Length: 597
Image 1 (cartoon, one colour):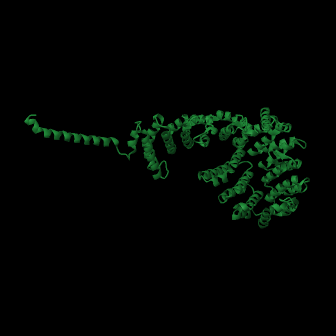
Image 2 (spheres, rainbow, N blue to C red):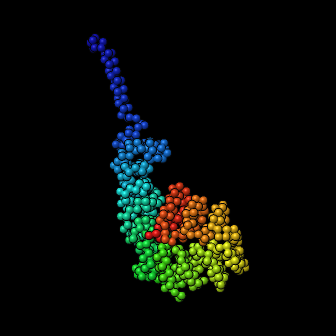
Image 3 (cartoon, one colour):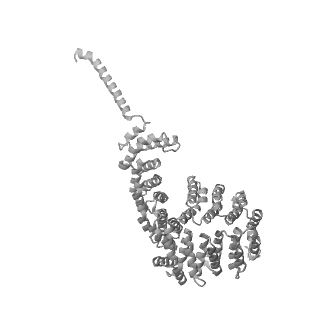
């Protein structure tokens, strides 16, 4: 190396090292710039575009949302949440639609969009529904979160995919999310698309081949209960006969109550078909009823006993009476009274008893009371109403819903005059006595005493009196009648005493309410509603609803709206006790609307 080179070599080395260091610093600086601010959501939105960083970006953006919701105390439109969603909801929705995500990350993403309740994420929720495969348990979680948002968001675009999930979802085969059917059903009910009518009716028409096939039975109960509920909400006239078929089939007993409520919601249009069935004028429904009732009674030998086959031919009459009475309109009364008249003295005892038992549900008139009393007297003491209740006991229990003390002397006389074995007449007298205790007035205490002191076998089989088993209720009744006589305000006072709310002494509240029902009319309904916040006892709330319904023979849509608000407010609290306490109001609401049509 020449001298000049040796002289400049250290200088060159120094320059090269310096350049390398400068380049390293610049590269490091460039790297820092590329990473951006880790606390800025926009940084992680950019990372959604790369497969390697996408799962972590999704998780970090969801964490931003959770933190924002905490700061805004769960308010999706809060000052922190709103701008955040502006930045992240679109990109995350797009990632859901096109991103190659593993099942776990995808489920987290669908849950986030479900929680956000933002329409801009609707396409992701719909995709989750479309991706559902009954045989793939991994898709169940995403569908659950999607369903939980679709109803509250009223996401109409999801109607088709949601119906498709519902049609193919089998509760018996759910693996990862066994309660998924609840979320799907809830979403279906909230969305309630009229376009679903045909498919829902098809579900109702499914025959349940064997109740012993538990898996299939579970599937059908979910499908048919949900379908009946939605068709009722839609007031589907086309569904009237399919709904009546559900009620006619003993094999579909688990769905019957929902189907009856659906018919009440439909209201007036359902009266004609049910009346035709009551009069045995609908050959199709009669044939269906006979076949289903016979099928329900097939013995171990594969045959239907002759008595069961004969009963199956008439089963439609009682079912039609139940449907009409539960709808509760005045024109339903005329149909039932006409049917009783045609049965006469020597007709079908069972049909007569069932029809008469249903009369107290209808608007009370002198004609309905007289028809009830006449039918009761024609009913053999030994007659039973399937599945296991005595006909006279069942009828007398129902008679309290007339809220009519003028019937007390007749009730007592029929009970006292009964002849027969103790195991037949004692239960009838007992049911009569409990009804008398509910509705008798202060000047009828002596009538109650007649039944109280009548001889009857005690719980131990030894001779006793009928009233011995009702000492507590009898004392509550007589003490209250002596204290309040015919003063309605006094009974309201007794109703609100602590003893009336306690289970052991709740008969005080029950008696107070029955006396309010006996002594008052429509003018008392608002006061009863005003009293509801003070009634925590579910039995008392149930009777309160009965009185409101009884005192509204022509219905009342405004009152129905008021009761619906009470139900909605109770459900909003998520308090199980409040929800259960209001559950009986739902049928009252449907009846108030049906009677007002």
